Amino acid sequence: MTVDLLYDWLNETIPFLSGNDLLLLFAILIPALMLFLVIAVNAIVLVYAERKVSAFMQDRVGPMGQGVGLHAGKWGMLQTIADALKLISKEDIIPKLADRKLFIMAPFIIFVGAFIAVIALPFGESLIVADMNIGIFYILAVSSFGVIGLILAGWSSNNKWSLYGGMRSAAQIISYEIPAGLSLVTVIMLTGTLSMQGIIQYQSGGIFDWIVFSSPFSFIAFIIYFIAGIAETNRTPFDIPEAESELVGGFHTEYSGMRWSFFFLSEYANMLVVNGVAVTAFLGGWQSPISGYFNTAGWGIFWFISKILVLVFVMMWVRWTFPRLRVDQLMDICWKYLLPIALMNIFGVGLWTLIFG
Amino acid sequence: MSELAFWLVAAITVVSAGMVVFSGQLIYSAIALLFTLLGVAGLYIFLWADFMAGIQVMVYIGGILVLIIFGIMLTHKIESVKISQTNVQRKIGAFVVAVFLLFLASSLGSAPWFQMVTTEPSETVSTVGKLLMTKYLLPFEVASILLLGSLIGAAMLSRKEG
Image 1 (cartoon, one colour):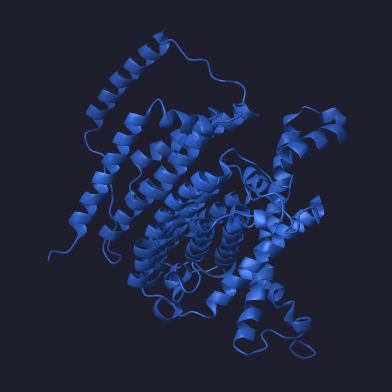
Image 2 (image 1 turned 30 degrees about the horizontal axis):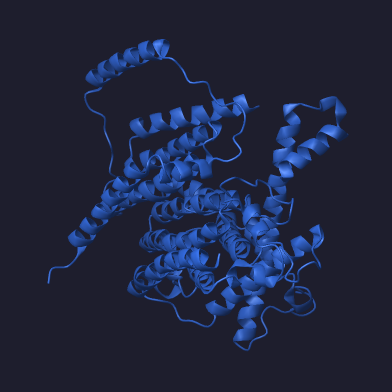
């Protein structure tokens, strides 16, 4: 684990403080700051990617350099950074009738919910902040934390569109947690461990040792998890919580400036988490697809991040391909289709391991 | 350091539990309950019960607390006055609490205590799983039948007639 390694290293390099609790504090704070940087860079890159992908899908060019005085970099690559600067310098507006304390608190709760989930993501063989005994279960558990922030944001804004958005997103996330959890149960049944690194170690070898290809049932589980993941990140076709044509902006209608950008940071951090779990559980994590090649620590980080980015691209592709679902259709898909399939799947994986395992 | 962390978590739990009881608005009580439940999950972690802590967060925060907040919001109209919660009969309550505290203090003083495990157990989840499937299989199955019954009951109640 990164924290232990850092602690040992700090103990060696600063001998007059060795054994001091201060060093442990540093060993915890440094990875935390690094993760914050990862989340920020992730949001900047993904916002740019989302704009470009959506533009190309609609036969546009997307953000470009805009002439001599207003240059946003080649191909508009500095556009997101300019947007971030704009958001930081914007006025912070709190509606007069809003519940002030909760209004201020809500973005932080959502961000904390996303942030504590990133802690358990294995970026490499030893590059994980906390390899917990209960890793994958921990991520599932803390992802329910952000829901409370969403409801609070919707409620405290004192605006009916916000309230509707908050309610819808809470109902949606809670419902889709169930098929997501059940599809991960199949993975846990195969690997016999909840630890993220343990699950990845189980899939060592080439591309055909990954869980997604190990049996037809685990492939179905991957598809179910991915659909539920799209719903949990509130993205189209499951974006009724912020359906622009009905609800203005959903739960973040009343937010502006830096507070608003915290919602976006956590939304993209959630995409990172959901796809990170999918990559860990089904696509071999930091393992190379070709057995024995490109398997060093540096390549591990490359594989993990590029697998995540492929899944993120599919999410964006889905977003610009499918129309938005209605509320009843959304619940139908979750409870009448995904849930029974996921339950049958658990049974199927059990049989499969009994016969072929 | 870990002692400091323990006292911090314990303080968060107790202070926010107090806020749940004494806050004037139901929604603030619910939010304070969030920190209480988180604090209890933290206490589980200090006892090396990481799986219990996960369950605590998932069931109580992700399920029950969200339901409570939903309930508060659905009964609250945006235009109307805010729902407040008041505590009545404080004197009798204080008396009952004092008697209970005395009882607790006397039993805490005389009870034989289990020693806390000081080293981290290598496997927590698999031990829990094995015990549930062997020694405690019957209570486990009874609990699941109870849950199944309540699920069917809820579906029956919410179903439209006809």
